[in-house]
Length: 123
Image 1 (cartoon, rainbow, N blue to C red):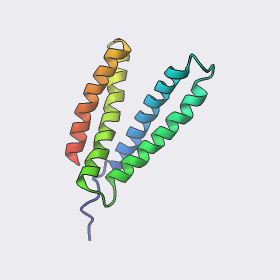
Image 2: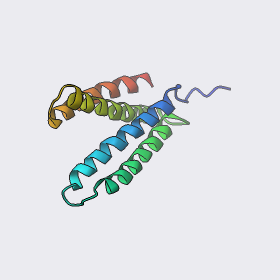
Image 3: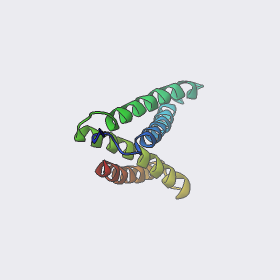
Image 4: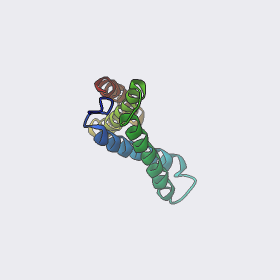
């Protein structure tokens, strides 16, 4: 008997990619916030980013696999799509287009919303 509520194949890939994106974004944000207060701020930022990334992976896996409702599946897919799109947009805006961080973040938000909509509509 087949399980019709299980997610399609990309669930592990989405979970890992969203966890990595969350790790990068949270680590960079924490480091940026505490760099003027603590000399070795990355020693604190990396474990916090790792914890956030692990929570993101667990949340996306739990939301995309097993017996979950369609709204939970779409919520997990939306988070995965937004986190991946946001990181792609910020990196593209800041590094490829040489924009300031504020403009790059706005591009990241836009790409994140588009990718969240695309991913959640596929689930």
